[in-house]
Amino acid sequence: MALNKPRASNRIEPFTSQPAETSIITITDPEKAILASLEQLCSLNYADEVLSEKHLIRDKKTRTAIARDLSVYIQQALEFYRAAENARATTAPVFYYYAFLNLAKALSGIKYPRFGKRSENYHHGISWKPDKKFYADIWWNKVRLTGRGVWHTLFEAITGYDCP
Image (tube, rainbow, N blue to C red):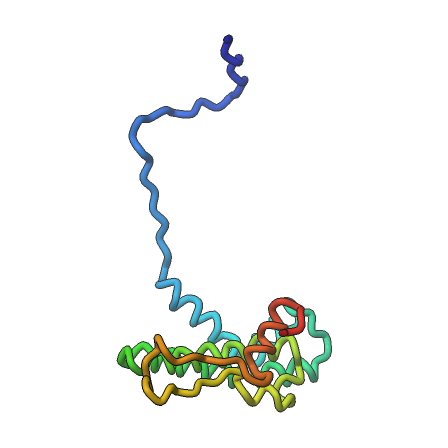
């Protein structure tokens, strides 16, 4: 069997038997960069710009209302997140949960401008009832979906489908 003819090229690629080493350097820790980006949304002017350009919300009054809510939700999320960094392993998950709950509210509030006025969003939509024999044993206790809440609204905001 004959070999294919080599392709014509003006570039000559060097051949080496040694693996090439490359490195990517960032200015900061990626986690800190994400948190700083989120914190920018606490600025009403910046949030207004993002809501107009990225989310195509044209009504100024609606953008202003969403921007105010975003500022509150994101400030709370960042405070819970920073508290979790300094908390012990037994408490940190609760702070992380509330940090992400507030981020869920922020994202849902962008998609649904009347998010804060819907009473269903005053609830998480999940509950936990401890087992009498295993009060705080995560392997035995179950978290259940309850009536509608923030997590249901987030699902719908992300997927565009009703949450079953």
